Image (cartoon, rainbow, N blue to C red; front, side):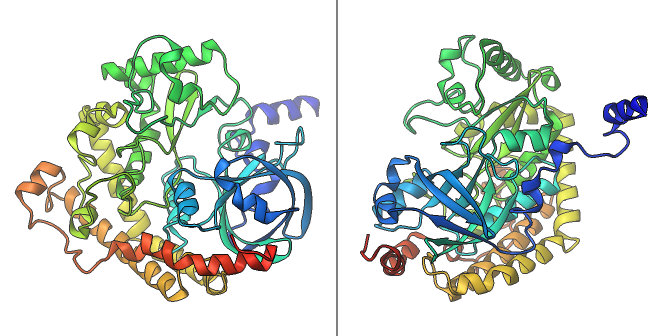
Length: 466
């Protein structure tokens, strides 16, 4: 019996027995996405928390998740431009982080150390982020789990949020096993800086030259860990032997979805961030994060943003960024120089279109999610939009995705140019998306109209306005 048990432990995965780390308890609890969950945040002074939210400092609270109580939890606001703009517009609906081991060593929710509550900032559909994670998971890219939650504060309604598994220890164990590697969330210090490290460019052999990566490590690391990342970037910079430094297949699948969803608040955009970098045994891969500004709705930080839906929905898959950005993004650019990888990238687009869109899976996912959340959106006291605007956004998102799929299929078939230059030379060769208003997915005007609603909800909890 002992020998048999040992063999089962050694060969369990080959025999189809899942790793324990792949099925932690939180997966079937909070991230059962067949229903809307409930989270009550119990905090002494919600008004003070909102007033100081932009500082992103943790405070202690208790939470009830689906009626089960957890105490001494770390709570803070989260975000970058979304947090800044929420504060600038005088709003109070911030995205939030809940960290179970911030104040309590070993604290967790059935194995989960941290999750976030996404406020659907500039996403009137409430669907963009969960939809992209579903697309990534479909293409077998490790993606955060998510589910919808009805959030209350001290028993008073606060709104519908998307609970998202934060990529930290629990995420790493679930996706990569107990012997997981190192995880980083590269980010810039200033948009005006070069940010070569965040762009995954090789600079030199000194770890101090990569603050955007190593100062944003999710796990404690060593000089040896840093050296492996730098060596991988060095190999990437040469464009040769990439399979020794890059998980090429997974990265190609990642870029298939990333390019499809037209997300320029990302590695392929001016900011170059909003991704996780995973390293194991000297091999790098890129993991998805933050999609509230996907589907062509990114305009933050752009002096002259493209708003023409015909341009955006037909954006070329072979050059998904302007030249000066593309040349500084070696993880995309240097891979696509190889004919084999370039062909595989196109094959993955074909698979994605055939099995996710042309099979009807996309529309089924979208409409099921819409039906699930509709009653909650309708009564959401802090919503950034009206219920009618939400319904319009869902219909718009459906049309954006279907037209985008049509355009990408035509690009693969050679009927629509697949590069920026060729599209500029052949401006009429596009799918007609002129009836689409991407602002219907969420715009700055929604922020202005939401203040009265959010102030009223805040008064209901604190007895005073923001």
